Image 1: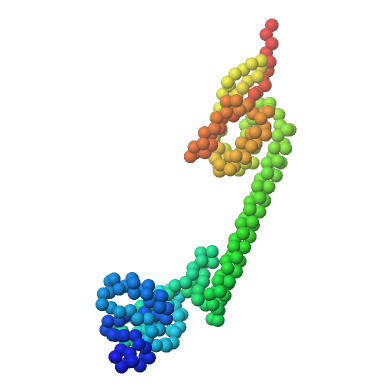
Image 2: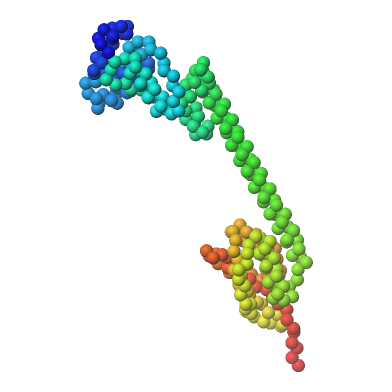
Length: 264
């Protein structure tokens, strides 16, 4: 820009186009901030706000990002005045709960005729709506979980209700009962050891069998629940549980009634 052109801008600001950076803003506070940062690395350069040089039309900020809009304003300033460089910035409020809104639309969030008060009011309303949706989702998820727990509980009640009808006559029946518990709890049985007799008295034998099961820890919890409900059939005095990467190893016992031998 020539000195004559500077005079035609109706401004009293000293303006040397070869040593001046135009800040594309009408906000003097923003000018001061930018000058404080850049003057340290650009000695001998003056900084002038575009609004101090005249009344220029605002460019259409139709960028998709803050960077896009800043470039639009800087390029518009270069088109209006002759200077060594032009600088512009763009900023806004990005709310995580609103997926980054209002973002580049912060200044006109409530509409073209909006102001800070209206923008803030809309922001609070939208934030409230989003919060209400999240609360509803949490309540819905908890209700679904409650239904799952209720369904599991009812299933367990059906199975454990049958336990009172069971009687332990031999090793085969004991294995069948453990198999039923395994299946109904959602586990899989991989291995059954041979029974080991720990003691024998008056025709009664305490036998222990080792089982290897596979499945989730939650399902194993159901399995243990079944065992607890059938304590009168299962001996746990020497029970052990080993949780490994290969599954659940558990040792369970039962008392088998044999033939009583009477010695003369």
